[in-house]
Length: 173
Image 1: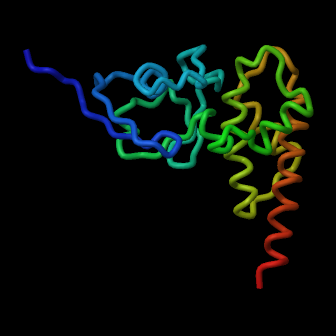
Image 2: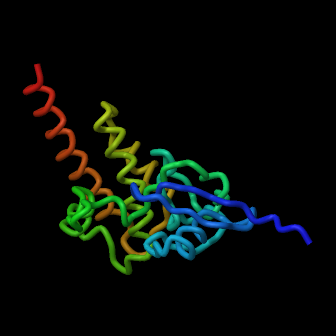
């Protein structure tokens, strides 16, 4: 019997991860089982909840809907890769703590990754109204907080990122 397993090479949070997977293995299972990164959560397995959100080459995706082989030779960022390499929290992670943007914490990794994408867009010059942020954040489900703390945290992080970006632009000739 011929094997259908596939070799896979992915950069996860800046580090190379190599593995052999069945073609039907989804990215979240690869991250959790092969890479040992369990911060990316699984819940619905249908792309509805957003708890499995990761960045794939900078864009947010539901890792339960992406096959691991589709990520071959790509850069994946999980919640473990959002903070500093020394374990320092990102601006968004600090804001989530400050604004009580979590309760049970199950959805938090997905929101951290989604918020990280939003902040990257802001660093590139994008601006967001409160309604646009609410729409973007509604892509992930939180059953505990009512989104108020999550929205406040993203707004605070955006304010910090925008202030830092404008300061940098003013200083740069």
